Length: 243
Image (cartoon, rainbow, N blue to C red; front, side, top):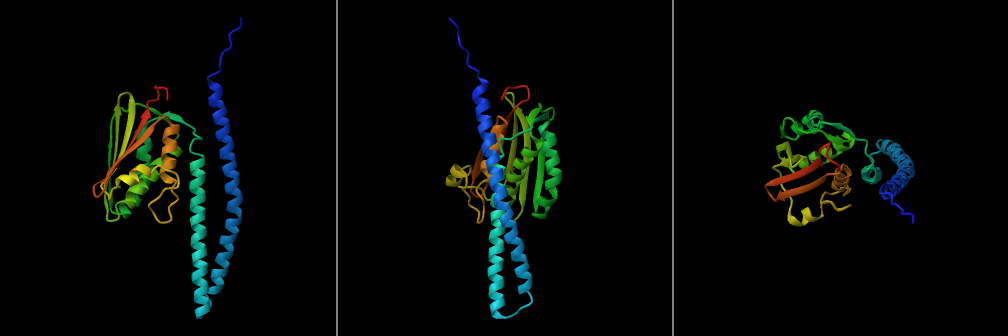
C-alpha cells in the first residue's frame, strides 16, 4: 500500500500565486486610472492658465470650480498611490541586516521635516541588537507612515522617540509621541481598511503598515490615551528565528 504525502509548501505557493495575481490586477487597474486622470489634470491646468487673464465675476467663479476639480484630482491620485502601496504590501525583498541601521537612515531623512514642525527626535537604539530579515524599502514606508501620523498628532510641536530592544528572542521597535492621542473607538478601528479620522485621508496608511509588518512575520500593537500620546510597538523575529 502506498502512502501519499502532502506537500506543505503547496498551499503557500498557491497563496503566493493568488496574491501576485491580485497585485498584478491592482497595478493594471491603477495604470488604467492614472492615464486619464493625468490627462484631466493637465487640461485643468491649461484651463486655469486661460482663466487667470480674466477678472470678471464669471471668470472668478470658473476659477474656483476648476480649483475644486484640481483638488479632487490630487486626492484621487493620493488614494490611488495608497491603494497600490496596500496591494503590494506583501511583495517583500528581504535582506538580513540591522534594524538600528534602517532606523538611523530613516531618521537622517526625516529629521528636517520633524524640525520644521517643532518636533524633537529622540532615538534610543539598543547596542548589539540581533539581525532581522527586512525589506528596507517597505520598512521605510512603515516608519514614514507612523512618523507622519505622529507629526499630525503634534501640531504645536513635541517629542518623538524611537526605541529598539531585544526581548524573548525577538526584536522590538517602539515609536512614541506625546501628541493628542486617540480615544478607544479610534484605536479599535485604526487598522481597518478605509477608516480615517482625517479629512481627505485614504484610510489605507495604517492597514498598509500592518500588512507590511505581518509579511515580515511580525506584529504591531498600539497604546494611546487622549491628551497624553501614542506608542506603537513593532515586534519582529530575529533572523535566526523562523517567521
